[in-house]
Length: 93
View 1 (cartoon, rainbow, N blue to C red):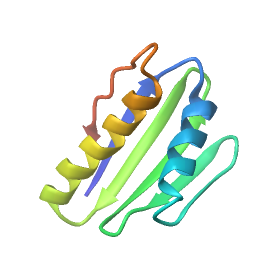
View 2: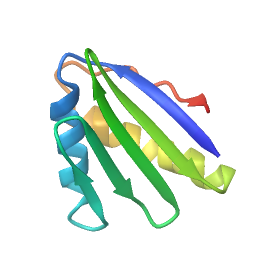
View 3: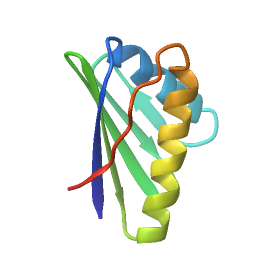
């Protein structure tokens, strides 16, 4: 299963870096200015910084895991973007 969220933000690279650095303390995560990868035990989150948006792509085998990981990733992003909270809407595919 794959879901994607395109999150409108003026600072996509900043949030990409914050998310990857935060999770890297506990699980494998890597990033550069444009792309990131967070390897959760049951899911993979790939991140891409575009002009004006951060694209989040979650991949997992189980529906229950997908719902939980969507919440985890969105909650962390919203915590970092508390001054101007973006809308995170997950779409299939």
